[in-house]
Amino acid sequence: MFYRPGQEYHDLPRNPFNALIVPRPIGWISSLAPDGTANLAPYSFFNGISYTPPQVMFSTGQRPHAKGEPHEPKDSQINPEATGDFVCNMATWDLREAMNMSAEHVPPGVDEFKHAGLTKAPSETVKSPRVAESPIHLECRYLQSVTTKTREGYGANVLIIGEVVGIHIDDAVLTNGFVDMDKVRPIGRLGYMDYVTVDDVWTMLRPD
Image 1 (tube, one colour):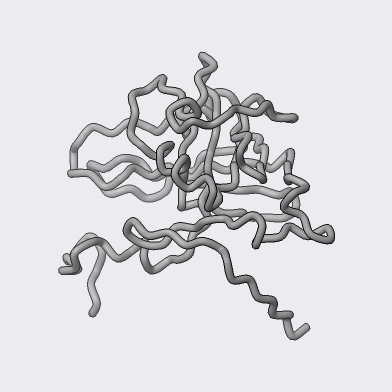
Image 2 (cartoon, rainbow, N blue to C red; image 1 turned 45 degrees about the horizontal axis):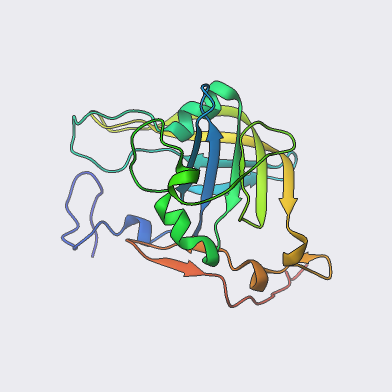
């Protein structure tokens, strides 16, 4: 099959686009509103983008909606832009249900930590709290927002970029000094409502 997105309909039960870029790591982003309200939400359009300095990005593009429907920026965009930081928390198999709860649409001002039954832990270098139950956290200083192409009448697609200024790794997930993915069991996003768990890890050295 072949179709032109935005010009032709794919004639499939659901949009296949996000099933074609897989698996995607989940950026479980925690932040603070200027009034001190905590926010927590998962983003699967998320990744690391550099080593020196270490930087990450996530996309706060709007969920698909009908053209012309009201759309407001998400708290995960508004908060870092206003307060200057955020935290990426590792989403794991053990935390899958809480991660999913934090994705629920709730009114502004609702604390998703409480909503999902999670515990806040203070960060070392930023004001935004960490998910205490998560084994790995990247504390990030907000750097910039990049608005990418958006179709007329739809909500903005915005990339939030942050510099990683603090890293927490639970000693319990280290084996001989390496982060042991069999212990972490991170989850990733596939297409539709499907996820994957990192259970099968294998090594392949580069030719050089």
